[in-house]
Image (tube, rainbow, N blue to C red; front, side):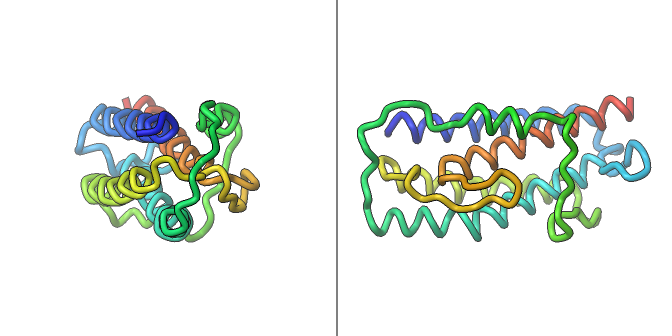
Length: 179
């Protein structure tokens, strides 16, 4: 497996593990509780993350990875990192509030376990698609992001991990507020 593929998979795995740890740190009985008016509960945060990841994987990343796999365009000889630390830093900056689009707002009707199960399903599909395109030119496929501008497929995958990490921090903030 290419170093770039391993780097992306490690990032996705580490952010998922952190999300799970953050959720598990909140007592199950309090996961639907909002810490304040206008703030999301843990269940709502996880529902949001699951919905965003599903839409991005199904509508943006997976179709482009499949096109790339079908074309078989090999990556160039570059061996540098594929995860953009500046993008991750921007995503993790919780001092800058980002407002979710109407379609990304949680309904509050989904429990944490159902959202986590949905996340695992979509993440498995994403991992399979990434592995299937190992060694192909992910950096050559660029698509616009509404907030972060043009991102190549590595950037979109980094975005998914960073989005999850951003909301993991939010879950920790909710846990602290509920304590």
